[in-house]
Length: 407
Image (cartoon, rainbow, N blue to C red; front, side, top):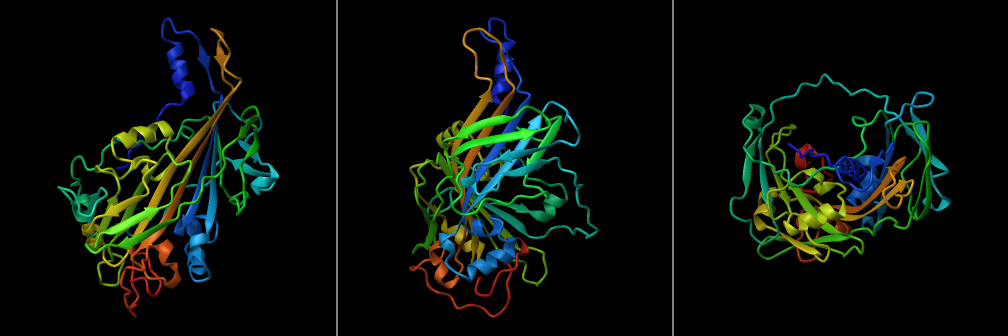
């Protein structure tokens, strides 16, 4: 149900325009396309996504210090080419400067794994999905939209449930490339550690095209620090720091507990998004170009860069139970490179390669959970009344086991 609109690269657009009679300049290529997605992660996102051992590592960090100060970095690298490798299989390397703390290089390889298949039986889902949207003390008209999982499994999907206003943009993929390599993969290299910097020269060498060289003048975005406070009307005020290079913000929460019988079937799942309209998918939780973000701000789907707070409606808090998992995404700048440089006049521009570097910063927090000193980061509030921890184990949204004191 997610939007899968595919945007054409700038070079492809130029090539199409070149075919129009009277066009000033003919453009061909690029033969290679490189994408480098750069993320700054904070809060629980830094714990689970920063190469620290998944959920187990997150729990260890939770009870071993102040997680509000944790910031992790993430790189996703993709290289696509319309050429075959000089000596199969396709492979390459991204070479970094020492300040990147990535070693000399990380290997780019072609995925050789197969989709995992399992024999675990899949039962018809139970429970409901309640959809809310928009910042404010109270939910707007027409909310919530309720989806019965059993009816969806039977093919009864509500019409016009998700719009396609927000694209999910991936210009480089295995499906649109004759040869494709990426990283991370199982052949080595770890995500960048603290103090890493991407400023300076980068080189990508492979056997599916010529070397790609570019120099970054932009670095990782500043980390997001978000906090929540339960208001007297039981709405929740979400606040965050202003990130200097952010182009816009989007937030969501998911809440609701299991069905209560101790098994994995669900009760109500509550999903809220900060969009002023019913927008839950596409690239809202991903990287988006500044031009797309600017357009979404005019439609009030994305919050503007000057905004640093959003009120989660009281109905969302009530329907979600004792805890919500939340995420805040700060979209960032984008850097684009191509070779050779565009020639002057009407001379044909035969592009060998393009490179795109996309930035974002995001944080994950828990709203309403009591983890002692973690209040500011995890969504606790000095104004919120402390609740006595229950002895009975509990499960969070989607049946995720939660530590003692979480509910």
